[in-house]
Image 1 (tube, chains in turn yellow, brown):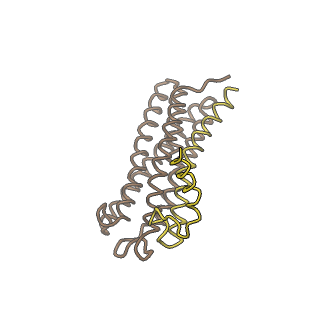
Image 2 (cartoon, chains in turn yellow, red):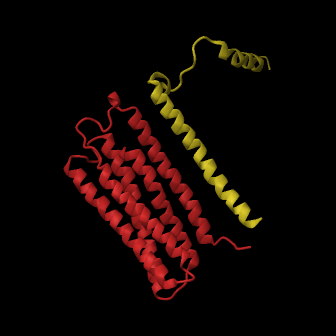
Image 3 (spheres, helix red, strand yellow):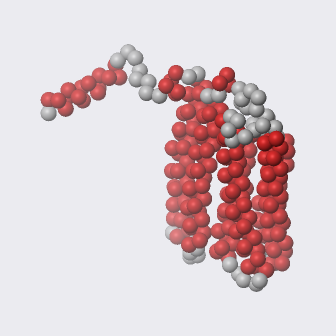
Length: 65
Length: 181
């Protein structure tokens, strides 16, 4: 229990650390244009399946309701 | 209430998977292009893709999609006219694949190969995947056309093949704009 509360406290304080945690060198260390490309493609690849499945489900719902 | 035929629903799910497949390829290409050394794309020593000639091919493919739409429109009212439009759509589809093949031969002669650069690798992978889809869709459309000529009515099969061809037609302008420019 004590360990868990310490862990939560550490996680809460982590954002206050001066340096950001840069997990992806390609996103963070490159020029801003690259970072924008990575962000754009990540958004596209994340949103597209949701749009496709959602669109198909909506079309079927409209057709059968 | 008109039920959705199983073939059409299956094709819709398949097309959704194919959209993801091409989205992944285009995404990888966009990132590779963005991170190219010195921001140079195509890489030094690699030929420029024939944008103008491919614009004509794109128009041929789009026209094929329009003809297929017309074929569907006249399928019940004027079947004979619908068959003519379907012939046109298949013919233009074959012309598109043939013209793309001619373009590939030219690019190979200019030194753009699968191994010459990431530019070549991405070009042949993405455009080749699309060409394979186009060939499969043309075979399916030709099969439906032959059945129609024999007097067999297969509305579900026609609708499913139509969906696949519209996918092939509509994904191409995206590939063209992302890969060729």
